[in-house]
Amino acid sequence: MRQLPSLLLLLVLSACVFASSDYHEQLVLKPLHPSLLLASFNFQSKTSWASFEQQNFRYFPRSLGQILQHANTRELHLRFSLGRWDAESWGARPWGGTREGGTGVELWAWVEADTDEEAEGRWLTLTNALSGLFCASLNFIDSTRTTRPVMSFQPAEQYSNSSSENLHLLHGTLPREVVCTENLTPFLKLLPCKGKAGISSLLDGHKLFDASWQSMSIDVTPVCVPGTSECQLQITHTIDMVLDIQRSKRPRDNPIPRPVANEDLKCDTSKPYHSHDTCYPLDTSAQEEDWSLSQIFGHSMKGSCPLANDGTDQVCINVPHARNVFASSGAAEHKDESGYSRCYEVPADQDFELALPQQEISEKVPIEQPLLYAERSFIGYGQERGGVQAILTNPSLIDAVDFVYMESLPWFMKLYLHTLKAKISNGNGKSSKDDVIQEMYYQPALDRKRGTQLEVRILIPANSTVILTYDFEKAILRYTEYPPDANRGFDIAPAVITIGNDISIRTTTLLLPLPTPDFSMPYNVIILTSTVMALGFGSVLNLLVRRFVGVDEAEKWDLRAIRFKVAAMVAALVRKFRRRRDHTE
Image (tube, rainbow, N blue to C red; front, side):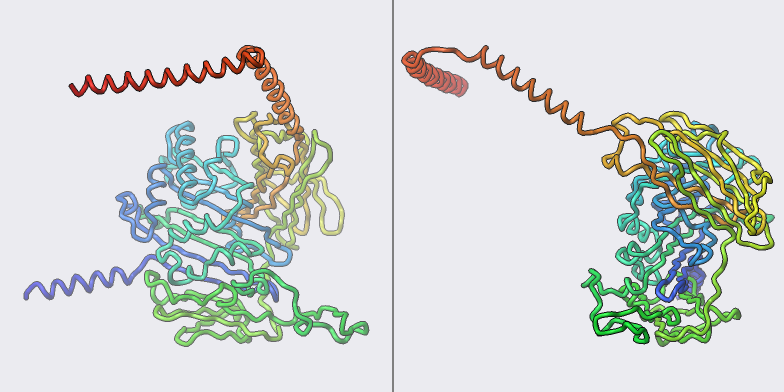
């Protein structure tokens, strides 16, 4: 009986320890347009560095932690992205673009190793292990798709001089990779509630991959207390998607879009040509599209994750305070001081529903203007040479923008460095010959060994545009190096633009056509030679084996052959029975 108070004390202490969780999650909803909605899912957990080295995993996924330990990886950044972010209509990117990758798969990591060869071996181990974990083709990130950025990426934590000397930054992309549900399923398994409760219960592959733009990211970074040696390892899972509200509201049992019935059409009856068979679309930009969580994601949110921090707001929506927003009973609403955001603390034991009814838009949330607009395209013509043009615009009327522009080109795209030009023009249309290129790093390609790496530090004055151009030559590949859809072209990874340490921009991918041989000719040659060999071999074999005799003689030979075969079979059976009898005796 004396041990009972100590046991109760132990249970109370354990409950307090589990109550103070190091895991939290949040969903931020932001209408971008009357018919578009940005949904940002953020999951973040921390663990001490000592617990991580002792393989004491609690909120940190064990499968990923063991891979990082085996490959001696200090930092990891993995991206799965599809679509194009429309900066002119949607404004600045979520999270400043730091949790966004280029189209396809993008991976960069800081690997600890003594030599470059050892770092490349551990990088190969890391890519192969992550390929199996996320059901992706990361094992195809070989030396031709791997670069070592010099100015573009910076570590999340400042390491000591002794540690930083052994850290190697490696970066690889797969712009051709198609992101699908097979990548989302292992992503959900890494979360503490695994899509069963909390905001992760809203994630569905049919909705995510039907979005106009979507990005999934995983960041593993150390977080150290300034002035001390205490460090924690933080893992951040992020999913951002831009949903079309009307398309997302289609029922799951009828996903095929069908024409709207005549009585449901919204027509502008003020037009003089309006009639029963002519409809001019009504301008609905002044009205917000009505939606709810169950309509957008297929079902309501299944409570809150019991492992998340208590007292935190799990769901936030960025709309003016004057807008009507309806939430489930039991959810605590908190409005911020800016007047454009409100958050909800969701109970753990009941489902949560959030609805935004259709209403007139009297006030909108101001769109954050990006620091830089970037677009990239091919120029030139022909199958031998070409060029790349990047248009970089600084919309600010006051401040200049200093950034790093990085290109990772395949080895068969031979860049001519002497053709690199930067032309600047200000807002009034006048051109300037100022040297906007502040610094440059260039590493030429080696055939079938490594690609081209180009990093340029550029300074754009206020209200100006820089047009960066360079020429390249197309190499001729071996016929075995072409993909099955060779006439489609080759995907070129997007350029990475880094502004400071907290802003990042990816341009769109490019489709490069290369001189393609006629793959029907090897097929025709194989068929022709096989036919000739078959005819020749068959004819020679016929002459060697066949014996020409008369008809009457052929009948005699047939009877003799049958008698000979029957006699041989009888003799074989007799010998078999004699051996068995001798063995039994």
